[in-house]
Image 1 (cartoon, rainbow, N blue to C red):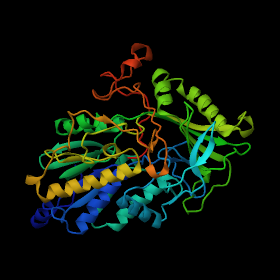
Image 2 (cartoon, one colour):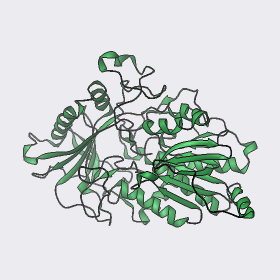
Image 3 (cartoon, rainbow, N blue to C red):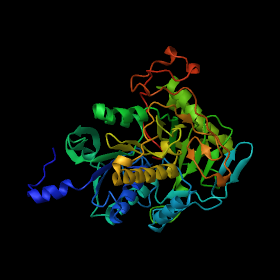
Image 4 (tube, rainbow, N blue to C red):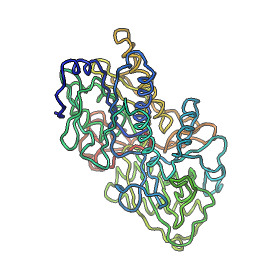
Length: 479
């Protein structure tokens, strides 16, 4: 147990009257939920007037990398790769106002209007207009780090921040129910708590499974729900071009007509942490495959997919740029990753924007509750905060319908305009849907287990039970 100083009886009684809420997660959903709860507490919202928030973060999944190691913090003025979320749009007024606030803090800005579009070998590059396309200054990771720092500094009397990166010993790994609430366990063996209510804000199966399994029967219903989240798989390549400059008169583009490639971005055309656009030096590109290509190559060829991905994705890049040979451009592969949990591909029926086990006081939020991407994650975080506020105001009258649909079928996300393998974007862009998710992804319904050899199962039969998602890197591009 965490050691605490001896307190007088009256102080202990006062402390017991404080509602303690822990939010675990490093993505936009968790940060948004913690911020909205903090705002409600400061405003004296009924049921939250005496609440305290503990935000437990680790390494963010809005990932930005320097060099060959992904543990290095991005440095101002230096080249970087965004290899998680690539950009985001804002549709609803509440999120538009929030993004404007992020921009006013110097954490993000919109790409120049002529620098983002679509590309194909047949049609070339076409600019996308109609909505702002936002990116983090210096990458998505510095943006998220800035949002967490701003949150902690704005509410120092309400919110306590437990940082699990770079000190991984403080990263929360386990959950445990006791008689008076929940305890959280860190990688280094410390315990945090007790908490009256826990909110999770991450959705990678390789993280949610062990975390919720550590809670035993008390967290079993939430685990059953989260195992119904199905995600696509993607292959992300980081490439430095050390020869001639590639003929790219744009920063980023959605790719059409290529089986192996869905996205290309020159990170050197993005803004640095000081807001100045551009990074001097060789072009640093992020290439993202289609879901269909990644799911086929990894699940059928888990040991050789990187070689195939390098060859096919660079070949696709050459075709859409009209290049005969890559040799003059001297591509050097910095890293190739397989994302086991890319973006959610299904959603709850009649979703209320979050999950909440009223009996256990355990909640969860993430883009999978709304729509894949940054705005979906933010909206889910808002919904989670509102549900908690409503519940704490009058627990006896609280309507819990639809908040824990573990036994209901989840439906595929509709292929509306703006729905892509790498996320959901504003329909105002006029972006034709391009979702290529397949039935080659094993099911998580029965939990984790070794993936069977490709010869032992027939992908055409769909996602059978007892095929745990093993072997890939768990990451999420948004939540």
